[in-house]
Image (tube, rainbow, N blue to C red; front, side, top):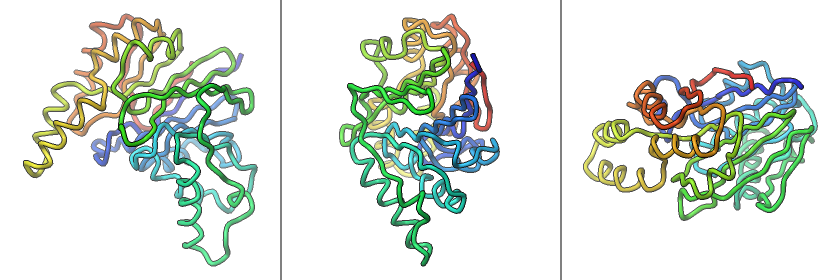
Amino acid sequence: SMKMKVTFCGTGAGGNYANDRGGSSVMIDQGGDVVLIDCGPGAVRRVQQAGVQFGQIKAILLTHLHYDHAVSLPELFNRFGRMGSDPPRILGPKGIGDYIEDCMRLITVSTSRGLPEHLAALSGESVDLEQSYEVAGIVMKAMEVPHDPDIQCLSWRIEAGGSSVVVSGDLKTNADFMVPFAADADLLIHEAYSVQGLDALVKGMPTEIAREGARRKFAPTHSEVSEVAKVAQAARVSRLALTHFVPAEDEEVLVNSAQELFSGDVFAALAGESVEI
């Protein structure tokens, strides 16, 4: 069966795009049919660099609506607005419907001509967690995960042509729910931070109030790399891609830490890079 091509369109955390990492975004291409998972700052440039046409994007999946995962959607729609095509299916957490309407409003404000037909047809659908969705032979399923208590956050599993990819989104990972969801995946793309990276993030904050806020908020809502490696090992995934790097994160430290607990292939996801599975 044809290979699934996975492109990392952005691998940075939050508002910090050190090393040109950009904001969270993953693109899956199965024989020219594309699924985009998240669309953070800088993602659209990477989608374009990959030579993808808007009509190839069959589905857009959101893990959550934090801006570093979703803010480039209006740019994506606007950039491709004149092309004309069937609108992609847009699936995400609670609130996605309103979010997509707001994206459309942003685009409408920027043009007196109103929206082209195929963009006017765009709408966001809150995912049914009991259901699998299928577009162009690509099967997509979501699971709710703990990240920000104020909003719904999801992980996604995408399967096509005998291959499977799991995208964690942002979360405090836990083997209880993550291992069954990621079981036997060909590729697990999982956010991860190291203690050193978090320390550097906090030290780099400009004020005491920011430093205090970062330390208090980050660790309870994100995944430390050894926990991620344990999940990958227990789930028997073939490859682990670490992503969502804080600015001063040393990718080598992250990868080495993961290798201590995970016997499969592990690498740091670099923005603009692709892997085939």
